Amino acid sequence: MTQAQLVVVANRLPVDRVVDDSGEPSWRRSPGGLVTALEPVMRRADGAWVGWPGQADVDVDPFEFEGTHLVPVRLSSDDVEKYYEGMSNDTFWPLYHDVIAEPRYRRVWWDAYVRVNRRFAEAAAAVAADGAEVWVQDYQLQLVPRMLREMRPDLTIGYFHHIPFPAYGLYSQLPWRRQVLDGLLGADVIGFQRVADAGNFARAVRRVLRFDTRSTGISVPNPDGTTRTALAKAFPISIDAASYVELAQRPDIQARAAEIRRELGNPRKILLGVDRLDYTKGIRHRLKAFGELLADGRANVEDVTLVQVASPSRERVQAYMQLRDEIELTVGRINGDRDTMGHTAIRYLHQAYPREEMVALFLAADVMLVTALRDGMNLVAKEYVAARVDNRGVLVLSEFAGAADELPSAVRINPHDIDGMKDAIMRAIEMPPAEQGRRMRALRKRVMEHDVARWSRSFLSALDDAKAAKRRSDARRASA
Image 1 (cartoon, rainbow, N blue to C red):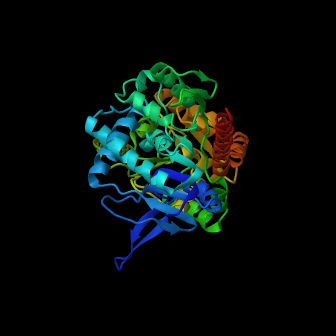
Image 2 (image 1 turned 90 degrees about the vertical axis):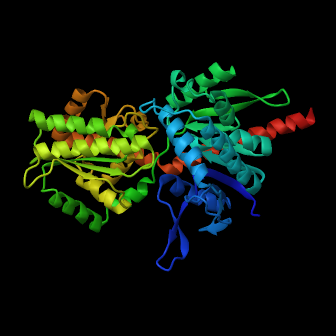
């Protein structure tokens, strides 16, 4: 078996399984910032990626794909139902997003979560070379760091939490709060999107485990009675900004942006929302604000159109089915009240689009609405900024998205404050070009300088430092 110096462990492999017309399966690279960020690193390090192939009850042997060794982890349909749809997305997801929806605590889900996390840990332990670095990704695999440390104490282990980590008053609801904290503290470096998330984690560790925490360091006891320091700090994730610039400069995509405006009836202003269909994204609040602006007469459909892209998400989970019904009823009601023969108030698109079409939408849109009620980062905000090579457009950004910490030149909103959101939307619609330019240049400078490659370098550098500290500690113990 291939032994790798760098192992990434994620719920999903960085490829999608596709079947052609002849019935032959093949693999294609998945879209997404994490895959883009880690691809060059994995190639240089002869890396391995451990993950689920994305289909239940499918056995796939390890294989090479574009310079990376891929190690599939098999999940049964029962695993998908209990570990993924249940514990990950019906317990952790709502709990960690401030209980916008009610989390459900089911012991059979937790048992499946433990079982599947152990399967991922065993696969990573088997493929990691002596003294390798292992980087575990996200909330589906919070127990893997501790399991790996017990199986392979020679490894240096990192973990990155892509979603928010909640305040202790919410986190304390979790029946397995101690086990999850212990699982995460198996890592040498624990990364979060925001400083506040790292702080919430440290407070939970103090309250539940009574460990000492100082600044970004947490003292974790070793089995032999000594202690080690785990680093827990913010490493805000980003995008492959250069690729968005490249797409936005293509004549065919610029032509498509102009075509989109024509298809919408050439309104004076186009507002855009791009989200997974998820209750954390504040789509209902956004529609309410826009509907009221039309009803109040502050905006009209001849001048302003809202385009809402809501890509399908977790369609077998009850809360998501209900959300889709609510949003589509709201869109239908607003359009029924406000549409004219030539103009539509809201163009609602419940589908996913390729990146080229999204960049054309970004170029066509005068205002980008990011109204998340809670979001670890929100990369769409950064994608819009990167695509605006013309230094025009206005980003309206929820203060509850991680991106708000990094993008202070956006028009900030509290999405729960509908009147405040209405005022912010009107301010964005009426913003003079000179002010748009000033704000967008500042936003673009931040996004271009702090791209996804810088994020991965920053995290892996911290992991290298932890590895060096581990060597020094081992040497001291050996000489004692």
